[in-house]
Image (cartoon, rainbow, N blue to C red; front, side):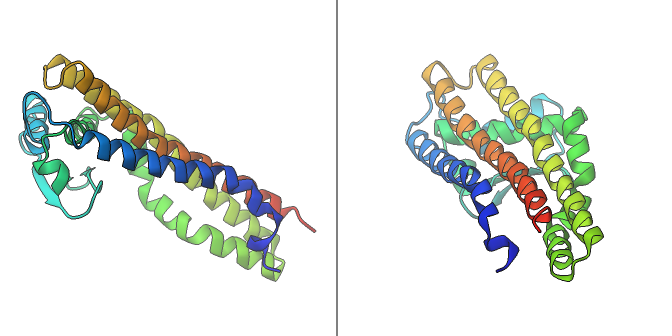
Amino acid sequence: MLPFYDWTFIIIIPALVLSAWAQIKVSSSFNKYSKITTINGYTGEKVARMLLDSNGLYDVPIELINGKLTDHYDPRNRVMRLSREVFYGDSVASIGVAAHETGHAIQHNERYSPLEIRNAIVPAVNFSSRASWIIFLLGMFLGLGYFVNIGIILFIAVVIFQLITLPVEFDASNRALKILQQRNILYGNEIKGAKAVLSAAAMTYVAAAIMSLLQLVRLIAISRED
């Protein structure tokens, strides 16, 4: 029987459950607050532009991107990309997401340490995420212990990346909520709604971090089987 079909699969079941719950939560929260129009009536693109300009980021363009919840800030090209629903939307959810991505742009401009570290290790992590399991399983099949160890070491890089992502995402959300409130872009229950959307989104990153940790535990457990 192949290693990834054995009992160790139960190790990651809690993370699978949490991941499924987090995805449902973020989708339901976004759908709920995307139906609530803000008092000011600003679109996500308008808010993002306002916040970027107020932080001196006039040279950061905002582009439209396909898909739902595909919004992101690209630090390599210094571009913010917003999905159609967020770009044109004037809902609490749209404003919250747009402000969150602006938070990443501000982090980048301020050289926020966790973001700098995360960006620096992206190439290594991209390789590690692809190669770790291949090298690990090759080592298990061929009985090459050093291959197994290399696979585990490579996967540790993935775990580190997921853990570093947590403060990056939480900080971006905290910045977003603070700015939205200070600049009177959102009011009262609108702030609570935006917080609910961003908190749900943050749980997806928590779930990913827990999944990577449990996968590491699983690899170690498999490697120690006779």
